[in-house]
Amino acid sequence: MKSLDTSTLQSRLPLVPIPPESEKRLKELGGDLMNLYRVMGHNPKMLAGWIEFAYSLRRDCTTPRVLRELMILRGAQVCNSAYEWSQHLRMGREAGVTEAQIQNLQFWRESPHYSAPERAALAFMESVMACDTSDETVDELKKHFNPSEIIELVFTAAFYAMVPRFLNAMRVPIEPADMFGAAGAGAGSP
Image: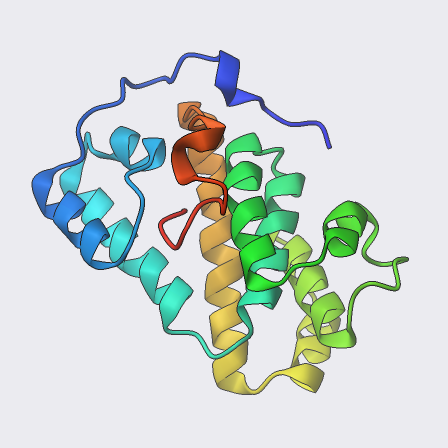
């Protein structure tokens, strides 16, 4: 995967302290105080909205977390977002994404490591990333998910189409590997 390695690039906006209200909310949610939020801290209202929406996607969905993490990881690949990949690689593993799925993600169509619902969700994610979602792609989702679950997947795909674009545009620097401990990033990742 060709990626934008932000670890050696200067952030386009300086990292600032996370506003106290957002820091408090992140701690309530069990979130990490990441560089993403330190860039967004320049606009406290936007940061507060981001936190609530992101955590709603993270905590209030009924679709399997592993499925949504696969979608997010594929979006990170498509957008060449090293930051997104680094954060969600840890989260995906914690959710149950297998090493075989990680290694074969670019080749998910040919790989035997994905279920039919995962394939439908990955095809949908790619279509959202390309701004070209066909009826056939949505019809395949309908074979595996009910309308409420489809809405969750639409919001997941749409939000995580935006996230890597924000990260890459602002060159948000990746945190040191040891910031999140041996277990990796917790629920506080983007």
